[in-house]
Length: 389
Image (cartoon, rainbow, N blue to C red):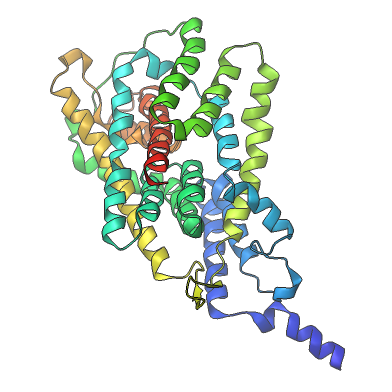
């Protein structure tokens, strides 16, 4: 009977708390959205299952949790908190990305830059809500809608907020088809939504090879803190465009990025323990778990930043049209693709455009501000890191 009693006292049933149950329910919701609604399943499913894993209670002496030194989850999570996984994901993204449309119409880069205003607007909002400058900078990057960049910057500036920031960033990336269309329709007229854009010019192979080299040099010199992310992005693209390292490019954009995505999603999800008590500077125990007022503020700020970034991209496209000739007008919808959710925001732009005019194909045009947004968010992260470190 003593053995049975001791066994029952160590089970999750005995150690389970209401906060743990709430987080497990959130994890199930994430998994359900991934499977039923097909909302970014490659991200939400690993994260959702990781949330479930991270909130199964265990005895502290068992060292199985993500914050227990030496545990398997802790070793995997090291790739997150040390900023290893995000650059590897950028390598895979670079190997998948075609910069041709952006190179054929360089002015569309400005739309990617305009969408980054959401980052700095959120930074100000976070600071006004009582977050430190470093925490505000890490929270602000959610506005770039770039999960790896958000994780990378959080690990450098505010590792204590890494879990909520990562979950918020990936959640809003998954909800792109829900969040963006109403804003796009609200800020544009039907006449603007049916604008047909001229077909992009053909970009030469030499341009495609030279761009990642020149692009890296410019970006790294402007913001050295972005070197790891930007360097991997352009290196992956060079592997693709050089046409002499197809095996490496194929590995980067398939096997490697898939493996890293699995490990990153699962470990980030597992880091969202509902309650985690640690001593503060005065030695008093405080809860730094996921279910805190800080997390609610982060999610609210993340939603606001995503909306602001989308709106800024659309409005700046409208502003550019004031100075463009009639046959060179930009469809303002593609401004929404300035956020870094590649390629989902570009697909949303195409879908909304097709609803107005089935003969209007905006996907390739939208990819230009979309990939520019990836570069812009990485540069913004580098700037924030260098300024606020």
